[in-house]
Image: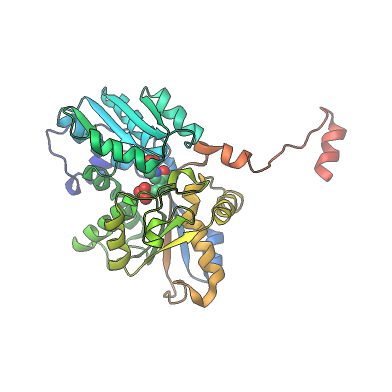
Amino acid sequence: MTGVIERYRRYLPVTDRTPIVSLNEGSTPLIYSPRLSALVGEKRRVFLKHEGLNPTGSFKDRGMTVAVSKAVESGARLLICASTGNTSASAAAYAARAGVQCAVLLPAGKIALGKLAQAFVHGAKVIALDGNFDQCLALVRDLSTKPGIAVVNSINPDRLEGQKTAAFEIVDVLGDAPHLHFLPVGNAGNTAAYWRGYCEYHVAGLTNRLPRMFGFQAAGAAPIYYKKVIERPETAASAIRIGNPASWGLAKTAFTESNGAIDIVTDDQIFEAQRWLASQEGVFVEPASAAATAGLLKYCKAGNDSPLKDLPENAVIVCTLTGHGLKDVAAVLERGVEPIKAAPTKEDVLGKLET
Ligand code: F0G
């Protein structure tokens, strides 16, 4: 399989002169979810777009291949980004691949360890700030005018261009756009990117419909939902702990134009959905990634009071799972899981199996 630039070149801002920096990202599976489908209702089909299966374990790789290729083309020597973890892991990997330097600005102590390890192992300069993600991003914006530096956050339009390819892949597999699309929202770039992808395919005559877009923020970090900047965003889903999203306006347009909505889920609902996906469907995602599924599960319980009520009979719903569960194992282990202790004997193990 090729990466997303080779696959969708004609929709992307690259030319023959662009040096392609790729790790064969994209082409992630669209996994049918029998149990979610049953919950939503007879003849309804729910699919999980498992973006945790990208090369660095998150959807960021789609945008990073385009952003880094374009940055190298323009002669950048240092890539820089602010991150809640996944962007930094992806930037570090693509920078290593391209042979350029990378520096990542992270909120100290607020990054899942798997992501931090990725940034280190790929050779990035890791700078931990005594502040939150929004402050890191403000600093990156300040540094962006320095010559030779390329910002690879989603304020770089090449990132969203790459990320829209996820919508293309969904349509390529389903033969049309889904009726509803659910995804987690942090800095809000991915929402904007999916909407752009669906619209471009629609204009190209490749879909009959456009999906309604539904985004989910963590209740303690929900600036778009509450329509105000949150100075101290709080959620255990560290990837989406963001109080002032960079793509706020674009995401708002996506929700409005698509007749969708921004909504919230509590941390408890997020962790419940994470465990539900892992134990019911065999799919392990990081907490933030479970926010969309938490939203869908919430709507399943809401009955007539939810967007599921006017769905056509054969409706298709897609939930984006943004990052792999192994990125943040502490999120699971800290929630009181204990192995059952046993002596190394058949009798003891059998005894434990029976209790
Ligand atoms: N899910 C995961 C796993 C993420 O890492 C992010 C964002 C999101 C969802 C939200 O996507 O920002 O496009 O609305 N992570 C960024 C980062 C902020 O720095 O890794 P979004």
